[in-house]
Length: 199
Length: 199
DNA sequence: TATTTCATGTAAGCCGTTACATGATTCT
DNA sequence: AGAATCATGTAACGGCTTACATGAAATA
Image 1 (cartoon, rainbow over the protein chains, first blue to last red):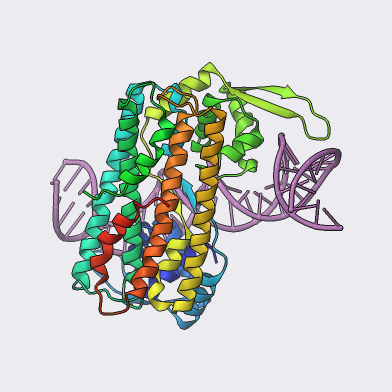
Image 2 (tube, rainbow over the protein chains, first blue to last red):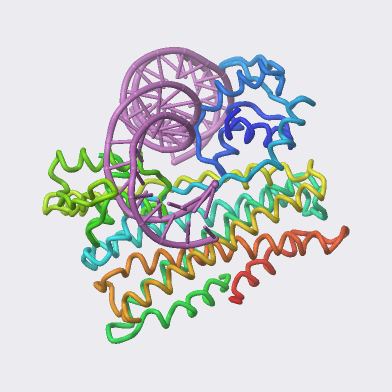
C-alpha cells in the first residue's frame, strides 16, 4: 500500500468514481496519471479494500465504478492518524529563479511572465471549481460533516496559494522598479502585507 | 540531463559547492537526497558541464568542490528560457483532509495539529535563513544582480507559503467553532483577508 | 480536419528512495 | 552514551512517466 493507494481510498470515501474520474480528481491535489491509477485499483480490489460495478457501454470501453469497502474504510482511518510524511514539491520555477543574479533582465522577464500565466490559469480553475461546488451543493455547506467539506477546504487552500504566488511575482517586478540604492531587505514586510489584497 | 542536473547547475552558477552542500541547499526548493546527487555530479563532470577541485582531509572523506564551467553556464541559460514544466506537489495532508466528512472531530484535531506543527517549523527555518542571509550580506541587497538575490526571493516565497498554510489551519478551526447553521461559503473571503496578518 | 473527451489497460525504462558502508569529531 | 554533522559513494528495489494500443463522439 503506497501513498497513492490511500489517496484513492480517500476520494472513494466521499463518492463512488471510475478510474478515469479518480485520475482527474486526485490530480488537483496529488500529481499522478492514469497508468499508475488503474493497476493500483486492481490491487485494491484483490485486497478487498474496494469493489466495483461494471457498467457496459457502447462506443467506449466498459466502465468500472469503484466504491470503498468497510475494510478499506478501516485501512483509510488508520492511515489518516499515522505519521504525516513531509510534503514534496518539485517546481522548476524555483531552480530557474535561483540563479537570477547571472541572468539578464529580458530572460527574467520571460520567466516571470510564464510563472504569472501559470498562476492566473490556476486561479481561474480554482474559482470555477468553487462555483461548481456551490452549485452542486445549492450553496449549503455548514459543518465538518457536510458532504464535500474536504474538497471545499482544499480548493480554498490551492486558490490562496496561487494568489500568493502571483502577488509574489508582482512584488519582484516592483522591487526591480525601485532601482538601485534601495535595500531589498526592507521590503520583505511590504510583501507580506500585499498578499492580502483580493482583487 | 534531467531536471535535478539543471538544478545543480543553477546552484553552482551562484557559488562553488561540494556534493554534500548541494544536497542540503537544493532541498530547500527541490526534494532529493545525496544518493541522487553524487552520480549526477559525476555525469556532469564527464560531460564537461562542471569541474571540481579535490581537497584532501583527514578523518573525513576527501572533499570535491564543484564549479560550473562556461559550457555548463550555456546549458543552464538555454534551460531557463525553455518551457516551464508544471510544478508537482505531493502532500499527504491533502489526501488525508479530503475525506474529512467521514472522520470524527478528534481525528481531525490530531491531523490539524500535525499540519500546524509542520508549518511552524518551516516558518522558523525560513526566518533563520533570512537572518543568516542578512548577516552574510551585511544587510545589503539592492538589485537583481546582487549576489544571493534568487535565494532571498525564494526564501520569502517559502516563508509566505508556510504562513498562509498556518492561517488556513486556524481558519478551519474557526469555521468549526461557528457551529452549524452557518454557510461556510460566506467565510471564504474572510480567510483571504486574514492571511495578510503578520505576527 | 484535428484535437479533446471519455475509458481502459500494458510495457519499458528512467528515476528516486532506502539501505548499506565508513569514520572522526562535536554536541546533547 | 548516543545522536548528529561532515563527506563520499554503491546497490537493490519500488514507483512513476512516457509511450503504445483502441475507438466513438463531440468540439474547434
